[in-house]
Image (cartoon, rainbow, N blue to C red; front, side, top):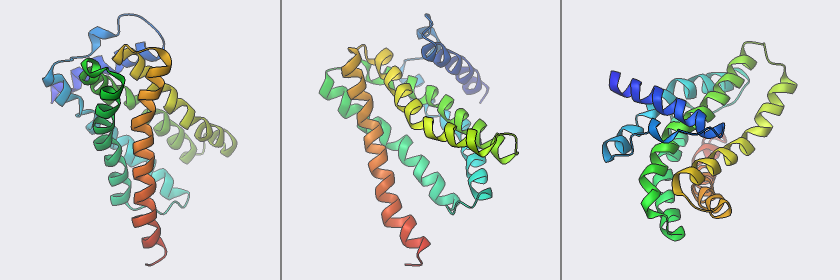
Length: 192
């Protein structure tokens, strides 16, 4: 476990270097097959943040069960590699696929952290509803930009091609979540 914590620390710091357009981020990621599988350990660091986001949502009246919350989050972790494999194949960037998954798995912890901080401060009464609304409003844009940057540095594709590659997993996840909501969550809420 200590190895995973150390690897997470180095990878999350390297991810910050990616997002702030600083050099020398590559050395922060173990791009071996072992590093590939260990990068899914980032889920363990996301779970507490997801739990707090869920608790905060319940505090304002969101009716989503713990099971639904974790299944929805699990969908994104499970679908990303599949959709990314398709995108890497179509764009001719198969050589960067493993690096893309590894960088993505560690870097998305920053997106979870963003939501975690927003929801925690809002639930604590520190963040006014107006600022919370702005923070939630800009999140989808930050998410797209983060995924675009991750694809760009990982795949070595031109800017626009990277954007298209990054869009594939995002769209796959959004469609899967929408299907899950309409077929499972909404019927449960309506008593069906």
